[in-house]
Length: 371
Image (cartoon, rainbow, N blue to C red):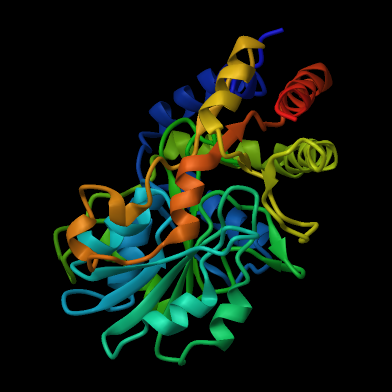
């Protein structure tokens, strides 16, 4: 049995008949960018995230959304932004693109979220924000982080992979000063291409984000540019497709949770390290295990026709793009261990029970072989 790491064809099969109509309708209306479908999807996300009063700003990607969010918070040259050393590069890229300086700190050994004690220790008079990330299938405790920080330090909640999840009943993405979701095709709510959403409860910040996504224009008067901006606008067809996919989101999240629970139960005796998260309303995005010989585990599963992926292959400050921001000798032991030991297993709603069983049996066989 072949088990692919992700299967885009199965995801797209949910709506095979809707796609031609979506294209035709928008062509007939002549609406392609930031029109009625984007407006509807923005309101739909606000309602789903728990409040119709939530301010939502659809953007071209979550990566661009993070830069726009930082700029809307007034962060730029001379400022420092603390971010986890083990993360996707978009967090650091957004900081650098905004003109600020990334300050990398380690992650926690149990749930792999940003180490709150390390954040507190890394503060300086130049610290203006922290980017906290909900990583893989985990949930970062944003309220705890907030309680340890001065009020003037903003929290940008990187919720790119966790749309639909909650922490103690509160929607992820809405716990910090500003949050960002991703709608890349493989995400829990996936679109037809790149796409993202900025969310905040502050109208003045949302207004700046709307202008910055559209070359600094206010959406009312063309060619009047109130601030410097970007071309980061969601297109209408993608927004309409995402709006339809919202109807399947709860069901698909529940399937993700069911698969993750089966993995959790099985792998406690498999000799692999697991990500600890006791939040029942999390959204499992990537199921990642740790093993001292990650390459051996991946090869073992490959031989069983189970496709896997590596985690982030080096901490961000060890990447050439960001190495010059880091003091020599900086210690990031957990991030380094994760980059060497992480193995991502298949986890998506369209996995069949037989495929899930095959993955479980493969990991257990590996564990038994290594005893």
